[in-house]
Amino acid sequence: MALAERVGRLATVSADGAPHLVPVTFAVSERFVVIGIDEKPKSTLDLKRLRNIRSNPCVAICWDRYDEDWSRLWWVRADGMASIAERGRSWERAWEALTDKYEQYRHAEHRGPVIMVEVTKWSGWAHG
Image 1 (cartoon, rainbow, N blue to C red):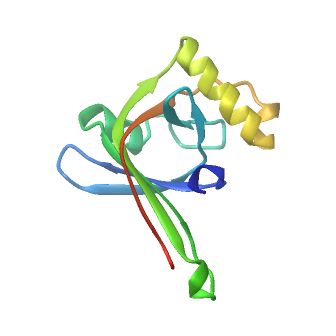
Image 2 (cartoon, one colour):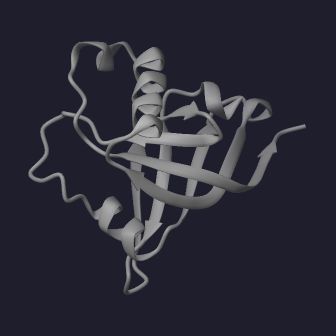
Image 3 (cartoon, helix red, strand yellow):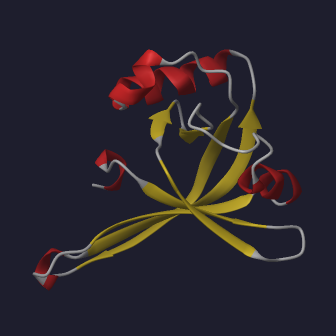
């Protein structure tokens, strides 16, 4: 259910313990949930989520569905350990998976890093 979604929310924690939450596109590559740092305009590629992962690799990703019909509500959370790939075969495979999932990535040359999340725990809830 969650892995078919188009967007998730990545939670990281800074070195001083401050939480940071951002919406992300993602895919599954090998045994990882992967999140690319793409070419959309940014003031820097030294993003807070990357700095946080470098100092504390524990992350969570949450997917959810809200509906006015509360019998359709659900959420899924993946807790895991993140690393950052900047080159190599895992980086290439991650971008291939992201490009397969998102049409918008098919017209860009990817140079940015990829967050590689090895999930250690899945949890979730669904109505009924």
